[in-house]
Length: 411
Image 1 (cartoon, helix red, strand yellow):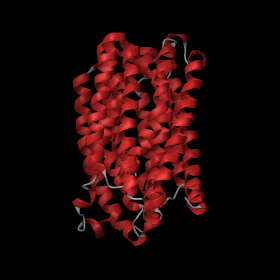
Image 2 (cartoon, helix red, strand yellow):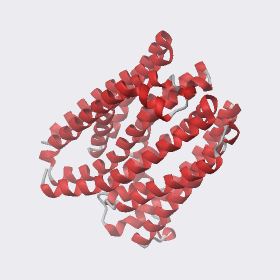
Image 3 (tube, one colour):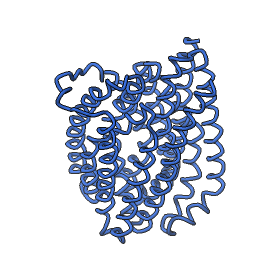
Image 4 (cartoon, one colour):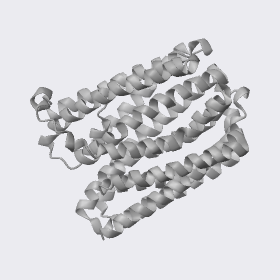
């Protein structure tokens, strides 16, 4: 990899990484605030409601977000306005469908969890204007930092002012929706000014086939999300909201790092697409380097968190949530393989091998769910968490092997 390529990747990763690190710290503080004021039942309901809506959101949008990053990275600036028109049409349709599904899910579940699900569903509407992946694609990074930090600051401030006890649980999804609307409108207005956008001029040129690759990517990510979230949902419906609150108090700490890795992977994807075109012979080595770094830092994170889980939980949570320390000591080991799994999946997407990826991920996620259910039946909540870690290792191995083979063919 050339010095110039490293410099470009480093610059954009630094901007995006800085914004994400700060935003994750703020979101981490926000989750602690919610957990300590709503306690087990309230926090469990909020987390399950968020996970349900977030699952359907990512199931609907992750494929097109990956495609939009990949394709906008290759487009000429003069084509971005037409591409944006298509992008917005697809997002508007998906938002409407996703809202209906999540509202129905909340109605079916009922209780506090159902109410949280329906309130979080309203945060889908501002997602019509979420153009962050276009910023990733054209490697325009500094607005992303403002987007993440500004929205999270607003979210946390609203929480501090409104959430005091379980009766205020409704303010968690309301605050989230307000923050999502503010940060998305900021990026959207900035993007329209950049490309001199004229929506109506391009509506007639909408071509659905350009977004066809989003479908297998969406299916693949849907399976990955099921792997990541199955343990929490399983615990909620087998052990109740309080048990789910204990689980999520631990898992949220790991999820912060996983989600940071996922967002940074779009920086990798945008640069890797260009790298495959400019220097395909060196792509395999670069892929190996990124995966090794991910395994190294993921393992380092797991070791540190495992041996200090009790102290971490004691510092940040009230005593009612102290059982989450034992869960955290297991869940942290997911990070050993998570980064390699995420990077391998994006490498397959960069190679336009999304159809192959969805097949492999379907198998891997199925094995993950089997391990979660089997371990949960034997060892309860701790077993469900251990099953997720095992599933992560399986998926990482499958996807790394496939991506490695595809990149070898390009040598």
